[in-house]
Length: 112
Length: 114
Image 1 (cartoon, rainbow over the protein chains, first blue to last red):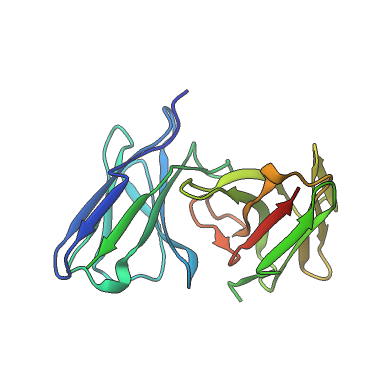
Image 2: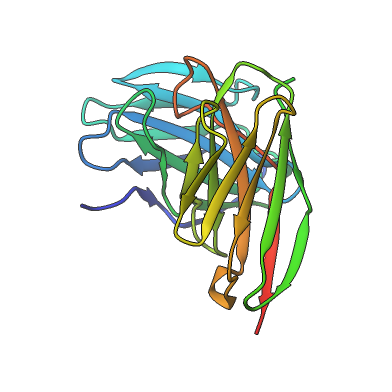
């Protein structure tokens, strides 16, 4: 079974630009969650989607948004990028509530 | 109340030794406590997890000890190997919450010296 796939692996963007990251969950998994990982703040929950609906949201500004498609693939978008948005963005998939979460390798975003 | 406090930040252990990482929490609504292992350039991988109705869970060389009254849990790595060198994260999830909303500790960087 293929794991969680995140694309692209690396991105360099300029301040003020926007970016879209993609996540393909494990086949059959309907829940996709996004996390931001930085050396200072560690792993922080961004949001979770289940069956195309946002189920949970972390404490991030509205510049961070996401969506999930009918095939469970998910995208997250960050608009008006700031230097502080430089981070590893991780996607995790699970089959639903009370099940294990499996992480992808992440997308390393650098904002210059 | 939503925090999970993890210690130490870094740990150096000799090969064959026991590595111990501790986590503490305040929120009594947490009902699931996983540990993740992360190698450089990789995403976190689930190692082992425990629920508060048991005090200990063992999988191979990895053991979670859970103290509900003290609101603490710890990871023990027996016979530590250089290949165990990685960053370890504890996490917690609220009752009724989904796996998508895990609260993570800040991580412990483990180095196992040969």
